[in-house]
Length: 442
Image 1 (cartoon, rainbow, N blue to C red):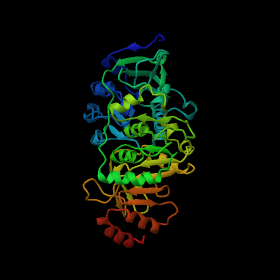
Image 2 (image 1 turned 90 degrees about the vertical axis):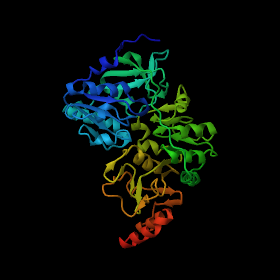
Image 3 (image 1 turned 120 degrees about the vertical axis):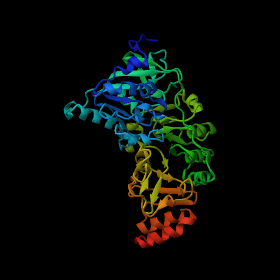
């Protein structure tokens, strides 16, 4: 192993490197910078106008919920989850609407504006600190950023100071995650296994949805899946398929199961043939073991993986996402309940549109017909006041519920309304028909 030049410091020592006015980028999800999140609230009141960029923290750390930090420390998060939704009520926690393919660009651009840099020197290292996670080093003198490459693999090369939480439990992955030990400034020891995400078991409705989606996915397709009960059900329904490829923003347990079933071999892929390509991985401890030192899997930045022109080059690219609600003209909301932000745009629009640009490709929105309690239809005449449109009706392709398949491309507004009402829950169809006629769609 090559000699390293980094300095090993404690979490308390490392946090002192964060100074007033800094722009700090921290890694996200399964590779989140835990020591940073656990320490920064203790240091925050000594700071002035320090901005932290990140996404999808695994829990509501004190730095999100503690009052009085506005003006000292401000978080710009590009994706929310149940852990930090309530924290958005705090003055110092903000959601940044952004396609996942643009997360790194927007973080860098925001830091550039903060330092009032002109376009001429926009390539200057404007990120003061990148604080991420990594594996132990290999015999060549490289560490792996592990389960994350979304923005981490780009930002780390643009930061003035690099702090990594070196963790023996972090999987060693390939692709754009490899980073030379010689360029690390500070290392903080980390010994906790990466955060996991266990999706709920598929319900009867999910299984029906999965079977309909499987009808739309042919052998030799390249697929993108989200996370949750529906994607797991889709994964189960695709187990009998063959020669599938994977080009997805997130590698999850459903992808692992499909690989083990023999459905995925990547032999028909046009890009990264024989490889499973993703931007990050999030799921069970078993998934992380599966990914560790697996040369068939590569992680690359979302600016590449979620780029629509790149996605479009995949053979029979099929993108499968879910939604909070959809109106009868095809407008999809997948990130808010009315005005309340619940997640983020993520890669839904990028992958849905990119897949349709692929020869033989398709963009699918798969969702239950009602909310979990069954009290509300998720197919509506009009989106809830304040609902954010994630996928525009001009871009919608195919919608699937447990009641069937509705293809939207080429259909006029009246035809769309009829098709979507047909796959709504039966107890809401009469009301939807009444409203569609009332507002002139039928």
